[in-house]
Image (cartoon, rainbow, N blue to C red; front, side, top):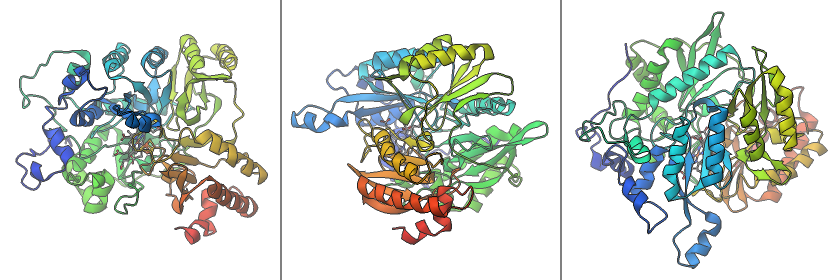
Length: 572
Ligand code: SRM
Ligand code: SF4
């Protein structure tokens, strides 16, 4: 049985007539399948931005309007419109790209993206600072190397993630291919993207004729995130996904996947109705039912998700509001059979493995640390030039990791010395970064993110420089502790599964979270609210000092905090 079900006709669905739904639902419904007036907004020379509705719709095309927040107040004082530019997010399933694709990303970033490339926590690339009249050139440039930005954002299934396995196993090849297949399967079919950005002719003669068989006219209630994980690495943080597939191997290779559903990080400040949630396991599906399973799960969210209150529209709230048993039952009904019980598996970390590793086929991979995911040329460390030089010589491929790092993959043994020399020549030799720095992630935040309440990407390096001496003093310099910073509670760095996390409240002020699981299996607890750096460092000094003195052999920092009641006792 095929689990595909067409969407309900919202104009006739009396349980939720359109005029009682949230404003975003109406924008989607009346958008002519995501066309809106984007063409018109792009031609408008008076403003550097686009109109409100088009800004919403352009997210489905992978594009966000932003303004430079560093100069926002000054522009306001001068009575100028905000300094608008656009963030363009590429769709890169599993984070895999070829050297030719990288060279194109590099040249587009130099031409239109402020000379920098941002690697994201979902294994893709973002350009910032793209001006309105550079958008088409940028997107057509991506098209030249078979890349696009379709559904990289918006109320649809986003970029599908996949463990960036440095062992490069046959299992990885198969699962990464399935991630690509699923990514193709879940993107919207509407042709608006091709018309607007590539200048293709409109084929459908009416809105009704346009094919959007799964999503219909109102797409999903909210973004939907999917990831594949290959145990034992949980680099994709599978429990934070709306839908996670945990690869299960048998003696003959990949057998299928355990499904976990209903994870998510996003919270709204001071709103207890919104919260981070870990995904629940609901069963096992054989690999030949993968697409059916995705259709069934996404179909339940499409049909039962909250379309009235956007802050409660993520799948995690559907699972809690309707109940896990109801949601599992609906999924099974759509699949036509009960799910088999989940199979055993072991996850042991959510960080990246750095340095050179030999794969099963004798080729080599090396993962490079990219601090805060920012590829740029800085004095003494020309990462942008280095990766371009590597891309010109490299015969394998690149893999972006879920921790915003970059793997150079598939290096033949005879090519390794040449690549090592290239990297060293650009100051990117084996770096001596400590264990904390290797396990630290920060979201973009200021100056481009409109939702940022505090710094994250720009704050991380300096903050690490203050925590590292504390670790050294307590003899913990080699101890991998996971640390994540987000500039606001939305949690783009997946902070709520880190052992130490900061989420922004105001400039220089953060909420401090402690005790997430080392492999992303447990949520951290809110330890102290709205505190500055000095207090944060004092708390960390004390907690890490006690950990160093009292831990049991092999005990992780987060586990120690729970065992000793440190987080439970003092949580706000
Ligand atoms: Fe995110 C919104 C950046 C991963 C939860 N996120 C945003 C926006 C687009 C701000 C906005 O809505 O205007 C940020 C753009 C900043 C900028 O200047 O680039 C933004 N999110 C990012 C990235 C680039 C962070 C990074 O430094 O890597 C990540 C891009 C991923 C990608 O390639 O697709 C990114 N965002 C995440 C993750 C992590 C993940 O998915 O694994 C989360 C938490 C998981 C989750 O979704 O629950 C995340 N982003 C959010 C939310 C909260 C959603 C919610 O459930 O409430 C928002 C706000 C929203 O959607 O309204 C948000
Ligand atoms: Fe922006 Fe907040 Fe996401 Fe950081 S966590 S990128 S500040 S939305």
